[in-house]
Image (cartoon, rainbow, N blue to C red):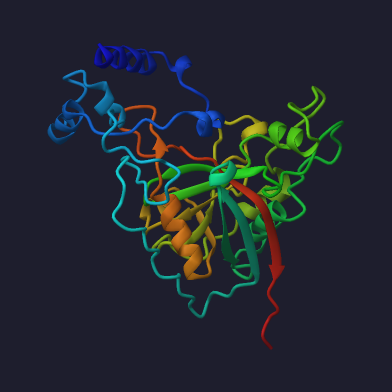
Length: 320
């Protein structure tokens, strides 16, 4: 039966990690969401694994009657269509100890083809509070991050030009942006299917640059939605297990709610979203469908491709 076929597939997927698709293929995977009686019941009872309802354990709702299209801005993480679009929370307030020194503007495309949607997200950075961390961010969005000058064939790590993307969503909690693969980004920049074998990715920041970043403190707590946060050791250090090619995949995160755990993780706030439209976009993206590959997983890669087409930086003139 179709039901047993699905369970067989899911069983193999959970037991054999090699069968899991790569995160870079997320946008090409068909959306599979709807409602099945067995899955819904075991979730309510909390015993999906015991009953071998692997569909429910993984977080997928099978069937066809109530699924929503992931391209729809009102399609939620659970595959249900919302009654109305999500409304963003208030723009974070500034206290006397904070000032916006740089404005970063992200041009983001959601989806592909004729159904794609282009949006703008505006971020303000606290350059007086954490100048070295802010410099990393402005480099990432401007000329690019360079940690190795003498590479035979290399390129700066830059978020714009379609090289950066939304790489991870923890629904209604946080978003993560970065450059998933330097090789892929370079290949795209030279209009090739793959980068030459001689290409060498930039390594994470080390030496004095790393020490300067590590010594800076977070400008504020992760206590509201709309805060821009970087790893405790700076951009490039989000995943210590990642190879150099993928080390900038988790360059920065944006809170979609108050997240005290991010303080415990040692992450550092370096800026915030600046306007209501950006907050609405944050709510939309953080409430969009994700690919949950394993039971109990709290987040995942977005089902719909979300690309950073452009990233620009403007310096704010200080008030005398």
